Length: 453
Image 1 (tube, rainbow, N blue to C red):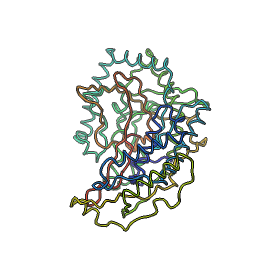
Image 2: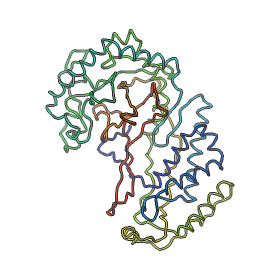
Image 3: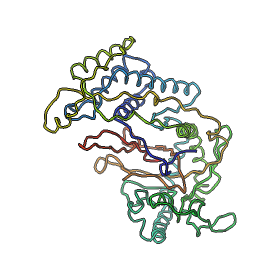
Image 4: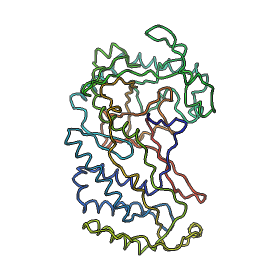
């Protein structure tokens, strides 16, 4: 039902710069304090448009063609999308829900987990981390790493051996990361790990018994191991979650003593509304960004800036837009790249195709069949501590392109909870992107790929 980046028919759409800058504008607006109040004021939003246009064209348009310019159609598009977000968030707040959209298939919430529960979680993790049992777990991690190396023979020493996929376990010696609970260690080893119900070895999934396809397709599965999930059961009203099975690499004695099983269940309960929205987003057709175009069109700089000013004035004062604005286009400047290479200035500004209104953001419908309430779920639990300092690193980079787990586990959504932060003013998760260049080396398209699922 839900797409996965390792599916054979999954291919990320190319996002043109209009859509890329438009997304950046909306996300910036959604992250402003009290944004729902500010986003209802056209004078404030007009100021945001001016700032966005200046920011997106901060480099010389005579030298860099791919930096787009805003037009009146873009203003209408962004205003409508921002209004859709604002109205939906106001509706959710009236229902007592703190969930907010990010328009990229990401949903977020501040204050969903109460301070008392957070304090219990922090105290339990610190006690576990400082205990002698943690040293035993760490020693087991090292032993498990060695065992997996023997099983995989030398194929897990470098990430390129997996065709760009993660190795079955991360680098435990990374100086910035301490992993308290890791689902990758002591995984299910096919034909060796035994089922607790009948003591029989766990066999390969049916998919792995079929005739192998191409090498790249086969690498999406692992025929030797699989992470061990934990079974969570969400109550019918979504207000309680029970952890029914063993949490991999968390000793059961610590679960009972520290109450981590109960705490993790309560934390997951807070994630249920977020996951409902994420899965609803995944179940509907994904926006494809701005339509592709091969030619660049140009309009004189002075004329563009004047029309842009007039368009913003009309928007701010609630006047009807001019249907002919920006329709005037000069002859295609097919030699503009050569002009740039020869350091000549044609005195024209790049004008790109308008955004596709079919892709405008709307709240996803959440039918009962997609909701997690009243269902049993397979969950991978991971708890990590990331240490950053001005003397060493200002940010933590996960490494190359990354997809957590393979099709054996088929993780379709990830919830990230920032439990605690010290000496950091802002914490956020960013997603990588790559650029498709033309023959002249100019970035013309952006490929958005989620870093985690």
